[in-house]
Every structure is written in structure tokens, then in C-alpha cells.
Length: 446
Image (tube, rainbow, N blue to C red; front, side, top):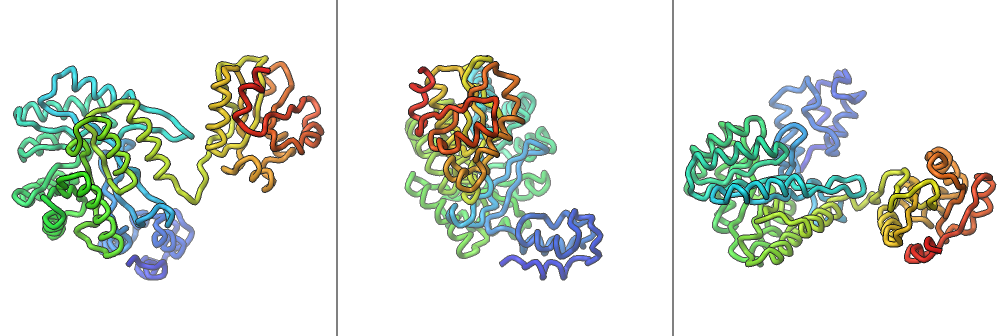
């Protein structure tokens, strides 16, 4: 069990110096206990005490950090079985396989796809995280050369180094420098040697057993060696076994506090499927149940985008509504004569309304008012989307400089505030739009 705020405070210097960024040691201790601050933020704590607090406060599934600087990926850190209990912490890392026996053109295509397939949705950047570099027996030089090429051309990618040649892994680690890779994989035969290499290179280490029992045994031995940044591959032999293993790992770590399973997992869906569509479907199952990383055999935009959106939805905080940023959104290339519509910043409302406007092919300006993620009627009832707040937003948004006319379309559900809004915006004509977004295309064309 984690330490309470009072227990943590008793181990702090109690100087209330503020060097941690908090006014008092008690305030800092409470934040550490709540998982909202790291004990490392206090520069005056004894290293032994710091280690003790960090260990006691660690989540049941350890957080493993890969990469470096702004190109870091965090795996694990999970504390619950079900998203509604609190939230899932670190999104499943999605990667692509690149092997030494691939033609140079194929390698270039995959590296290009890694950088090309990026989208922005609701202010969230959707992109891939890692590249798994596999040594298929073409020689140490080919493997290290491929790692060097990827580091130079795709510096944002976190690398999974997959080789049975310990010397090749060591040289590849040197190429990575401070960009921390994941070494794959420690087995029952080589875990001591790879464990020492991971400690020397300060790299994370993947564990690969033939089954859950063997995975636990290897993990336990590596823990005894002092290795704490592990990632688990249970060696499942079928899709069903793979799925069940992910659930068993999570339940054992959270419910039973079984330390050998208290680490994120890495999965390779292509090992269990015959075609890319089946692989994508399996990946979509592994993201919510409970893979720390998913490595795909290839990257295709039509598969990646829905996986990215699924991941984004699963790893948002269910206690906070998904919102879009307040502002002016041009749709279909509007000009100074295009209609102006206003709605709330609840993400679902935005996507439905913007989709219908885009489908109408009528150039329009869409004003998104910050309603703290509430829908139209809920925001109106809460006083966040009334005549006064809408008028204030329209005045400060700058839309008046973008259009010649003064006509504002409001949602049909807000028809009752038309008169009040006309009083607040005397220069504007208030037009009542349809009650449902599906009526927008016909409404705009008319």
C-alpha cells in the first residue's frame, strides 16, 4: 500500500523551504501521496528516503519510460482494472516492425509512414510511438546500421531492439545514446547476461517467457538483480491465450500486488493472424485490454487512424468531458459573405455539427464557445451558454472582422434566448437554426 501524506511528511526535512514548488512540506507530501507530484521534486530528501518513498508510492504496474527529451513514451503506471474506477494513465504505445532482411525501399516506406500518418483531433496529436527493429540473422553490422539509420531519419521514434546477439544489442544501445531503448528479450536462457547489459546501458528490458509461469520466474530473477524497468511478453500461443494473459497480468498486479507481473506488457498481433485486417482487429482488442505496447507488421492510414482514435477515447479521463478549443473554425473555405454559426465546445457536438456543415459543402464560419465540455442544453441550464455569454464571446472572437454581414445562427434548442441575444447584440440579426444537426445541410443551402 502507498504511504499517506502524513507518513511522507514525517520523512521530509520539514523546512517548508518551497524549493519543491509547494508552500509547505505538508502540501508537497499530500501531492506526492495523491500521485500528483514526484518525490524527486524535493532536493533535500536523503537518497535512501527518496528511494523508500518512491518504492512505496509506486503504482502496482510500474511506469517504464522510454526515449528521451520531448520524445519520451511512458508505459504502464496503471492503478485500476476498469477505466470508470479512475482512469487509465499511459496510452498504449503503437509501433511498427522493421527488419534487417527487408529491402531498403520497404524500410524507407515504413519510416515514411511513421512520420506521415499523424493527425490532430480535439487538440490531441494522434501519432505512432515506436519502431521495433528486428535482427533476422543478416549480421550485426546490418542490425546496427539499421538502428543508426532510424535514429538519424526518425529521431522521434522510441526503439525496440530485437536481437539474440548480445554484442549487436550493446552496439545498438551505443547508437541510441541517451535515447533509451527497450531491449528484447530476456529469456530463461539469457536473462542474466541481458540483465547485466540492461543495467550497464541503463536500458529497459523486455521479458519473454514460454508461458505466464516462466515469465513470472524470469521477471522475479531480474528483480533480484535490481532491474525495475521491465516489459512483459508472456509468449502466448493463441489469440485467446494472448487476451487472457493480458487480463491475468493486470489483475495479478493490481488485486494481488504480485510484483513479477507489476510491469507493462508488449504484444505483437501479427504473430497470431494471417492477414492485416485480422491483425488490426486484434490490436483494437489489446488497446483496452491491457497492452502497454502494440507492434504492428505494417502501417496503413485506414487502420492507424481508427486505432489512434480508439486509444485516445480509452485513455481520456472519464470524469472530464472531452472538449475542443474555443475559437473560430472555418469550414469549406468561407469568405466575408459566409454564414456564421455558434455552438458549444463539447467534442461530440463539435464533430457532429462540423461534419454536417462540411457535408453541406456550404462555406461557413463555426464559432465554438467554451462551455467547459457541456452540451448545448446542459450548458444553457448551467448558465454557460446563455445570451450574455454568447454575446460576450461573439464580440471578443473577432468574427466581425471576417464577415461583412451581421447574421448569427444559433442552435434551434436555444430559440428562447433569441430576444435576449438581440438585446445583447443589437447590430446582429439572430437566426434560429435547426434543432438537430442533421437539418443543417438543407438549412444552409436555403
